[in-house]
Length: 286
Image 1 (cartoon, rainbow, N blue to C red):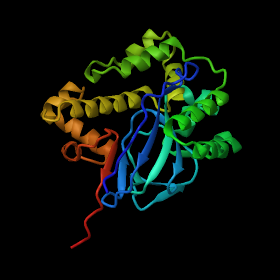
Image 2 (image 1 turned 90 degrees about the vertical axis):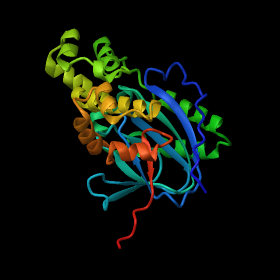
Image 3 (image 1 turned 120 degrees about the vertical axis):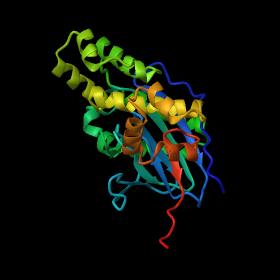
């Protein structure tokens, strides 16, 4: 049976959460024996994910696929610079939130840099509230009910953290613009913010989990994935220049390092979700 993802994008993020939550989602994935792993590509964003039904999450190290971790219960996915692989193919029901820069401190009480590059059990951050969240979501009858429950939990946990400084918001907006080739230089953003270079880097990493140069690299990849989806027939050389790479070779090197795939291989797979690439089992040795 093919894998299906049913999402509920119509659920509005409450006003109190909008500074910290980009969007909410609910998904149901049917069993698919033809796919055993999925590459989750870096997006520059943190995620909160609750598996309501299905086996625990099993993730594999990008550099050493023989190493894996199994995570039961709700998890927070910190921002990553490279892909990770996860077990794929089981029937799963899940609910989650995509988080904006600054959300880590507001919702979990820690810097985004502390959670970067790994999955953290929500229980490590929320204690017993994590299990209570899972139980209440599991008791929900549909996606709308579960998403409303998730919103209530997030609003209760929301601290009175101040919004991001204007200079930092402007820098994030500039680096996230749809035309990656037009992204400003980091030193120009520092000057515009009227803050020391060291202070700017520290605040940026505190909010996003990454330094601005590494964040900009992820935004360039995101722009490339979006361009590949919009224009599947475009040449890779044209896409490289359009998206801010010096040439096709530069794009190919960064793409392989960050996704574990070649640009042409990714395009052949044509994933339904740009940052989630289901992979067929490896062929047995001859």
